[in-house]
Length: 152
Figure (cartoon, rainbow, N blue to C red):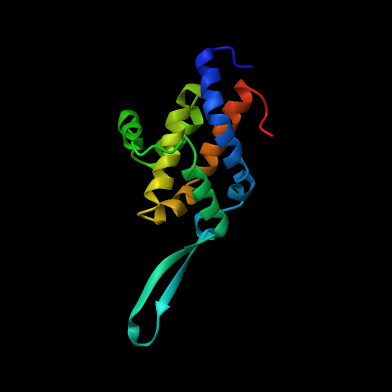
């Protein structure tokens, strides 16, 4: 059980949202970036076509649920600047070494992919393809369960 008041507060603040997003872990474990996006070509004859991505409905549900969590932070760029993140490998290394005190930074990594995806939809596919979504969720789940009790 959490014995530090700061840790208890973090767990209390994030537990419900982490539990909500954890239901996507089994689905994310089975996916690669190519599995969640396809292109639809609207238009017809004459070479005037418009192509746009069509996303897996479960990915869209995950993004919608993630957007409603306390983890979403429009100022995630400060975490990226402070930690010198340049690549997904940098993000994954941070995720791997994160502790309970890094829970907001984990939310900021998730925020980058979820929030940027509203304007640059390729980010959602990259979040799956680069294993950012799954690794953040697995780490958040692990941290809450380590310091508190298992998620239902």
